[in-house]
Image 1 (cartoon, rainbow, N blue to C red):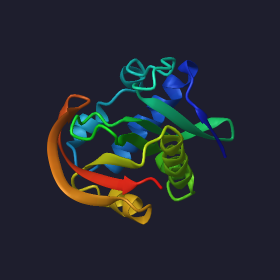
Image 2: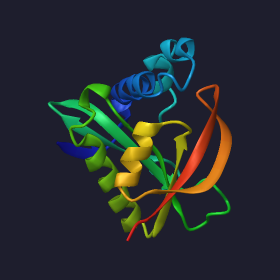
Image 3: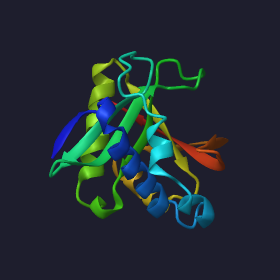
Length: 168
């Protein structure tokens, strides 16, 4: 498996993984009509993989067989109450590749990247009720810290729980 920074030409493949992972992973958590209506083209237009600004999201992709199988996006935490903390903004794997080590490789590489940038702690926001995500992150040492929020992502209102992890 090859892990590398996302490039502008990766947008459609990353969006394909993103949409498929939402459609499979959030079934039963979000309205099925909403999930069925997600379009790869709409998602791909939102990515900016060419921006080198360290304060903007940075994405790593996992490739196997010449195809992107998953991705992880990190950045400094958006929460102003956590000025020295990083954020794992997204980690998605193509559902056909769940359980094959892609997510583990990506989360490990994302943590290493954040440590190299000088961060010692990171947070992530997990969709409430996402039992698969909860198990995955807990196995990697993330802990729910009791903070919850309501957010709007891709035009849908969601309830999220915050998880934290030391990076050392």
